[in-house]
Image (tube, rainbow, N blue to C red; front, side):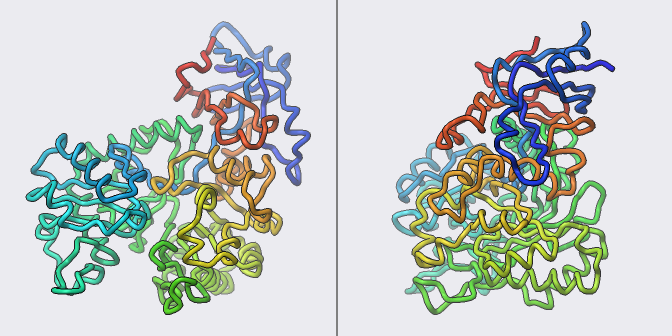
Length: 523
């Protein structure tokens, strides 16, 4: 036996965990890995692996760096991420003035005869409501829109309103208190129509460019696999079929999910299933469904987007088509509804658990709901970065006590529930190390995981969630040679440094796909 690529001279963290994560054994991971074609063929001592080297073998000396399985991001809107990377990024804007300055600067470079849409603006975080009249000052004749970072609302100008031809009774058209004039803010059905108007105006060339930008971002972050959740009605009709055509030409591995309730779109070769179907909304606009009223508005508990019988019927249809299925469920009422639906179908169809039902976000589960999810064989895709940093608005919405119960990772892991890590990009950037840092270093004890547990969330568990654990997630013979080289050993650094560990190299299928400019070189 020989090797095409041998990696030696550093720390090898295989992420092969016997029963529970053993921090001590994993920290003693010196060795080497051999790759033939796109598979790992051997993991062992440097002397053992060196015997597989011949004059055609590439040898990569880690120089003391650390090798891990490639990271897996289990919740990415890949086309949307790439479109957001085309700019400008409005996420740092805190005033309407700042938004308009950035939009005006970028607007001059765009064709004036095509609708233009800008991404990642925190509309609720601005100093006042952004309106269509603000956007009219920049684009009086070109349809122009600004999308919210939560992907559930946008603001459009007058030209866009006229071009879309919305019926006055369309739900979600915000209006002035006096005169009832549309302000340009679109939510609900109006938001879906508005976004699809802008995205359907894009040609496939722009989407393909966006895909490659998103993949480059993933590689720079050490992600070798992303779960791409595409095809939501608000994002137009082209994203899912385009990814099916181009997926094998991309430099990262893509597990493809449909985000449409039209299940026929998912029932085609190459699509894993359907997930991120919205059972509720978000905390920011008080549409996440809660069992008790919002702390800052006791008149509402949010909103469930499905009736229970509608959700049940959808699940039975998905199961009959052999689809893995998952739902966006943030609030405890939405989690309860989805678990009830899973329990009903499992009682009627015991094979349902083999499809690994998912819940996306799973933000506010009770201990009973966590236990129920374990019993039902549910896997959850969560976004640790969303629990990190200042949470002033969320705390205001939920109240301090309930807010502190969000993202209880310690309880989830101790209960044995499969939890995998994602970014929900482009809500937050693809950045697994930032997620790992958030899991290890939260203030609250019931969110805190060990370093090994956090690494597993973005490696082993991500593979399990898509039923790919025989191919990915660990460094073992027979598995795909998807790996990331870190500049520092995450088991040895101060925990506060985890988020700033440099990604030096990303390898997919034995091929070096990205190298930090001052990083490693193959010999």
